[in-house]
Length: 414
Image 1 (cartoon, rainbow, N blue to C red):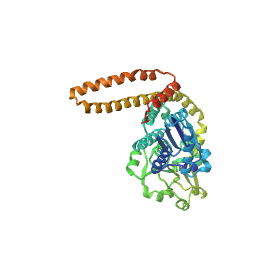
Image 2 (image 1 turned 90 degrees about the vertical axis):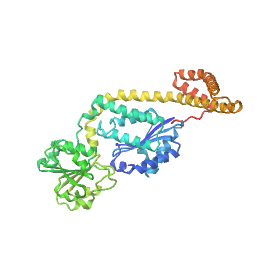
Image 3 (image 1 turned 180 degrees about the vertical axis):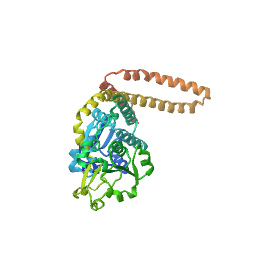
Image 4 (image 1 turned 120 degrees about the vertical axis):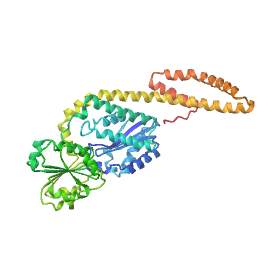
């Protein structure tokens, strides 16, 4: 059995991450591609910072990792960038998933959005029956452990410095904040986070834009005004700073929208795929930044990241150990389950034959059935107990395999 993880993470630039961003239909399509390669279970996680594929192959063949990387590179036409596609297997792949869910691999350490995204990715895979008993157990344990880590370490309660949270830096770039107007487009987790920071700074006005006005209304706490989405571009001449963080698959601000502005405008594009045309940066009055601005902040906070990882590491190590132990034991359980099922099928066939020949009444049928069932179970009891008693994982796996071959058992992982 091979656990694998491949993909493009936040260590790559926004241009490459944009190219490998999965749409929902593409998640379904690529999952089917892996299934055709023989993969048994698959979950795909696609966010603004990462495009990752987690999969399980019941066969003990390491070549599936390379085959999955090839399929991924071909799917997105990034064969030349294949070296950027990370790959992990076994406990390393499992540990990586736990780390990602807890926010320890995020640029914003401990952020909550990634856990919600993992839940959504798992639920989508579950709805298409792309998960079985192993991934169902794994993702449920990952979600549970991530919540426990956030509770015990307080990792999500620590405010992370955003580019607009340092008032000294803001003043040096943007002048007096009290005369500046800021527009935040998109009220997802990132947009809400920027709003929370903005209200703590002395901006003259804060404007919120969202396709669904009701969502923007729920976000406003202390101050802020709502601009209808269709009127967003009309208000650009009034703004000094615009932050865009939406899930739109295309540019919502193009170079032509910004070329007519007669004043300096600072733009921060927090979206993947990007929502602001990169060519806008060629305009002399436009100062465009993308989500990679967080990498500089992450470097400045390596100490915080290290401390939080150390605190959470023991919990993740224990969780991975527990899960891997369960997987090892489940191989034995699968053989035993198949063995019992085989016994039941044999019993049913012979009882049907016997009852047709001797035609007993219902009371006699019950007596005969119970007697035969007890005899067969007693015959199988000692081999099953012996198999369960083997403590060495490799030996237990070897004996399980031999048992399956001897009894011609057809095992399944779901």
